[in-house]
Length: 221
Image (cartoon, rainbow, N blue to C red; front, side):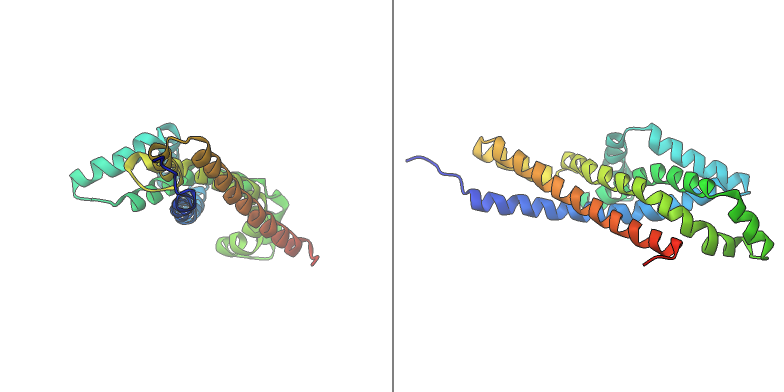
C-alpha cells in the first residue's frame, strides 16, 4: 500500500509558517523603524556622547554576523539570566540589526534636505524641535521611504535564519514538509511564492505611502 502525502494539509502547514514569518516581519520592522530614527538623530546630535554611542551601535550590528547575533541572544543571554523564547529572540535580533542600517538612511535623508529649509525655519524663529518636526522630517521621510522599503524586504528575507533556533517559520515548515514527504519541489516552490507575495505587499504599501506623503508636500491631492 503506497503512501500518498496530504498535500492539502501540508499547504496549511506552509501558511502556518507564513504567519510566523509575518509576525517576525511586522514586529521586527516596528523595532527597526523606532531604532533607526533614534540612532539616526543621535548621529546628528551635538552631543559627542550620543554620536559616539550611536556610531558604536551601528558599526557593531553592521559589522558582525546576524547568525552570531541570533545565537548569542538565544543561547548566551539565558546564561546571564535573560531567557528569551524563539519568537521574541527573532524579533529583537532582526529589529536591532536592521535598525543599524536604517539609522544611516535617516541620517542621510535629513542631511539631504536643502540647507535653505533650515535657514528659513531659523528665520521664522522656530525652535530646533519645531524645525525638525514641521520642516525637516516631513521632507526627509519621503526620501527615506524607498530605502526603508528595501530594508523591510531584506528583514523579511532574513527571517529564515530563525529556523536555526527551531522557530516554525516558513523556511522551517518547508524543511519539515521536505523531510516528511521526500519532495523538495512542492515545499520550496510554495515558500518562494509566499515570500514573493509578502515582498509585493511591502512594496505596494511603501509606494502608496510615498505617493500620499509626496502629494501632501507638493500641495496636490
